[in-house]
Length: 116
Image 1: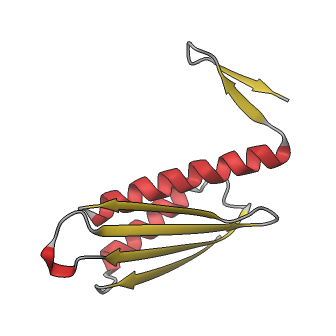
Image 2: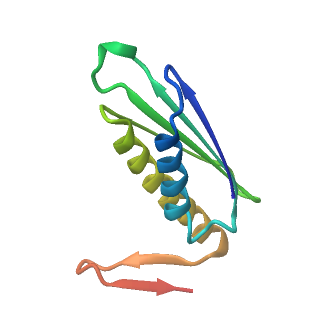
């Protein structure tokens, strides 16, 4: 799995790059062999004015399945990265499950029943 990071409105620090790499590798670990490339774009929409303006856009490219694109806006960039990465990984797993025909059905009591 290749990871490409872009930033708009601020420089990419070493700590931020390490956080993105670690978070994406962890959240996509179950499906890393099926994900060809993950592109993440980080931006500060309002600049120095502040507010809920840190955006994390993740695009995961898969083999034979349409790409998954997830966006999250938060006041803290690290939270936006974590939330977007989690949502993107869940969406990828859902798409892969639909492709292979393995679906999970949830009972009212939260018991997981797997159908083949």
